Length: 485
Image (tube, rainbow, N blue to C red; front, side, top):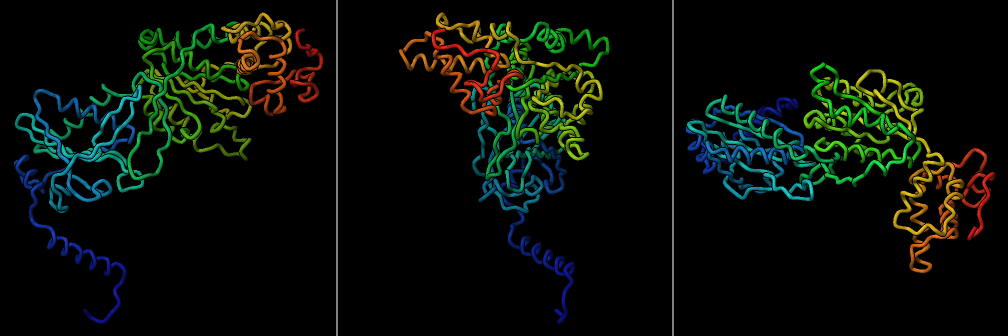
C-alpha cells in the first residue's frame, strides 16, 4: 500500500471489505439450519423477500395467543424450533440473516418469557423462535423476536418469508385479526407503566381488580351521581341508537374537588356499572405513555380511559410562563384523533381545576361535562357516619355533635376517623363499642400533623377556625365535647 494517509471514508470502505472477506472465508456456504429452510421452502431462500411487522412490547401476549390460534388451524401444519447461538437473545438477528446463511446458526431450545395476565395467570410467550408453516402448497417461515430492553431489539418483531408474497401478507393479516379478536386486555382493568431498563423483556401492562362499589357507598349531593351516570352508564345503554343517529360516541368527563371527596370511588363505581368495558388507568409515571394508552383505547373500545390528577400535565400555560407541556399537546392530539364512532370515555380528575389549561375543553369530545364533588354537608356527613360505622356499636357516640364538629371533613377523613377510633376501642377493652372519648382521641391524634396533615387526609376547617387553636383544628364556634358528653 502506498505510504499515504487514508481518509476516514477510505478507511471505512477498506475495513468493510476486509471484514466481508473474513466473514465469507469463516462461514461455510451452507449450514444445517439454512439447508432445512431451503428444504422447507423449496426455493433459493437467499432470494426470498422478508415481510416484517414491528409491535409494541405490550402486544407480546396478544401475538402469542394469535400464533397459537393460527397453529391450531386444521388446514395448517406448524413446527416451532429454537436457534442455537451463544447470546442469541441479545443479537440483532433477522430472518434474512438465517436465509442467507450469514450467521452460523443451528437449532437450539426455544426461548420463552412469562407474562402475567388477569388473575395472575402466566402465559409463556416465545421470546426467540422460528416457525415452519405449511398450508396446502404454500410454505412459510416465521421468526418471532421479542424485545430486549437495553439491547439491539427495543420492539417486538415478527418476520415472515414465504414462497408467495401474498401468503406472507395473508398470514400477517390473520395474525392481526386474531390479536384483535383474542386480545388478553379486553374487558379488564389495566394500567401501563414504563418498563425498567434491564437484560430481558417484561410486561408494561398491569392488571387490576377494583373493589365492588355500590350506589349507596357513594355519598354525593342530590343529582350529582345522576348527571355522571347519564353521561357514562346511560350513554353506554344507547350506543347503537346514537351511532345510527350519527351522534359522536367519544366523550369527556372531568371530576374535580378537594382530596378525599370520592373521585376515585366514583371511578370504581362506574367501572363496575359498565361490565365488558375495558378500563385504562393512567396516572403518575404512566402519563409518559399517552400514545399507547390512546391506541389501546381505540383497539379495545368500548373503553374508559381514566387520567387521574390531570393537572400534572394540563397546567394552564399562563402558570408555566406561556408554555404548555408537550404531554398535554400529545394527549389533546390523541383525543382529537379518535373517530366519533369510537365508544371511548375519557374520565379526568383533578384537585386543582383552577390551573387547568383552557384548551382541554376547547372542543366537544374533550371535556363535555364538568362535575364538582364538594365536601359533604351535614346530611351527607350523617350518612357517611352511618355508612362507615357499619359493624360498629356507635351507641356511646354523640353522632349529632360528631356531624357538627366535622364541618369541612371529606368522606375519606370520616372513614379514617371511625377506623382510628375503632382501633383505640379495641386496644382498650377488646370490643368494638365506640364512645366519645375514642372519637376525641382519634381527632386529636389525626390533628397532630397540623394543617398540612389534615389537608392531606381530606379536612378543610371552616373559615372561622384556625388549625392548632383548638385540639382537632375545628372551628372555634363549635364547642369541643368532653368525654362522655
